[in-house]
Length: 411
Image 1 (cartoon, rainbow, N blue to C red):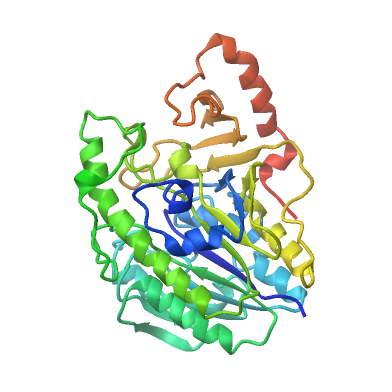
Image 2: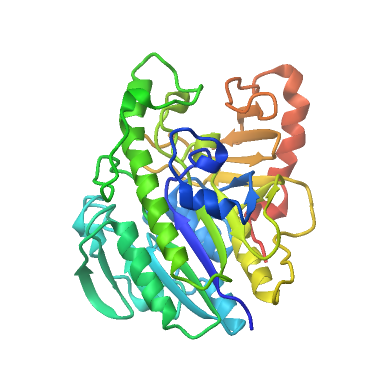
């Protein structure tokens, strides 16, 4: 019988903020244990470091704006074909739990709070999932409002959001006919970072170790420490929620754990997401399948998750699944198709290409904006875009952005 497959998708959890990656601030025993029995895609990136764009790309396998999401407030078109349709065609039951963030939002309403948390997502806008229970947005890390297949109107649940969603997901999945494919979408560790984190006490900001690319002057370090104290508390609380979810599911469940995007947290003096830097575009990606744990050091974009998942569905028993295509050009495309007019976010549209060793980013006019040698400069401290000696490198990497495949379709 085919194995169950689970995606766990968090928000704003950057790749560097995990214990198994060596982050001394991160208390992630459950993720560390998962990494010890998984394929760790060390070079995984989000195709778009902003929630709706990234989620639409993951679900459809098509990059924004080709998937219908050009603007932060755009809904995923009701006719869009998603991984839920693909898996149903393979005789899987499908289910979605938690944060959706792909329906219409009122531009005039406050983004944080019940206005967006209580938006009802109509069935035709739920991505084709057989079972759906979640919330549009609202950034309520505590006491979430849920609605869906078994809740026709929004109902408020007491407790930490990650705990509530994981507990209700495990309960529903136990009653689902197998095999099933499910997405558990968690908002944490998204701001507000000062929100209570299920009893986890925030660390002393002064004791936190900052990345070396956070400038000491200008107030960035002080703000970063204050925010990171809450950020790491929510990471610890959500790690615990994920561990509880996995403990309640069959042990042979294939598990894919990742995040929609990261957070700058003061690196280069910047905050939040939308930026093309490593703290924003690099994400954790663990895939638990039969076989020994290992590191995959090749380029990989979350745009390929849908294709990876259909490969997992095709694998039987203990047969290793082909988690990626045969090695190709070794490059991942990254972009922000539009400016999101919210505080701290990136101030321009851009598109770029990232390999495990280099990164080129063009601005909205197509001019070179950033060029980094990631092998020699992993913290991106030296922008080489204006260096005449690197002009050939700009041309070489730029060819990836001129290919028809740059539209982002993976099938």
